Length: 122
Image (cartoon, rainbow, N blue to C red; front, side, top):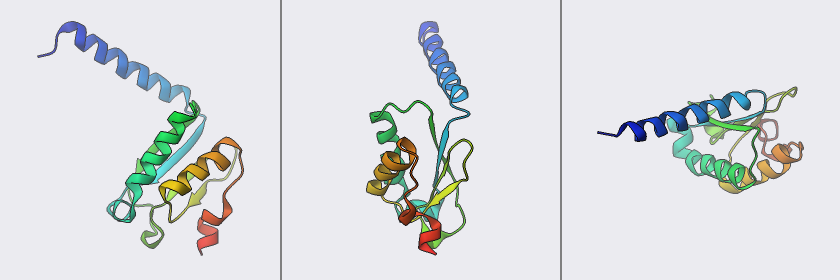
């Protein structure tokens, strides 16, 4: 059993985490498709690459989440990026290296990496 002090620390850490999410509600959202098709196609390293890059660059207005199948299994791993006031961008056939480029060009500099988008793949 945890001590009262340990439980209080866990509670505070959880509240801080929830608070961070609220603060970032209007920021950039990155959603990685983690359905079985996405995982089989390599979505886990893509997710980890996004998380590492955001942390490394200390990007505070970026929320990374996961979802189930996005719907076009042959294009997995898929990632959706939503920036406030802009259309959602869907990236396909992602890799960990492509994720780093998306962070650098799209998330940091606002320039969509067109050759990775669903429009370029179709």
